[in-house]
Image (tube, rainbow, N blue to C red; front, side, top):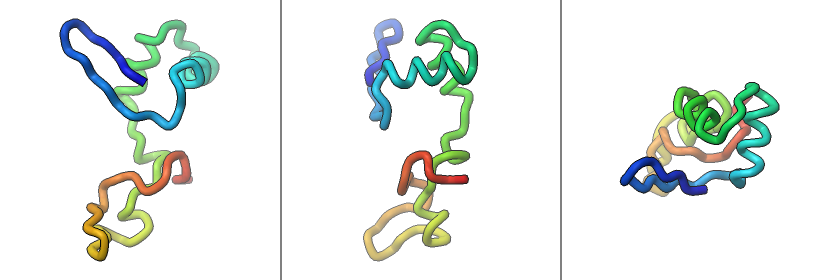
Length: 78
């Protein structure tokens, strides 16, 4: 999914397509536009739903050089 604001091009990888993202946001939050959904998403904390490396190993995973604060699995943190 790519988002274009002004002259700055911002690209990020998402586990959901744009339509799924917007549909879920509209159903769950009542927002009406993609811009509203992006604003709400920018205020959120993905670590509440994403499992990080440190959640599994208690910190960095030295064997593979993985820092503890990167995502290990999406939408799996209770």
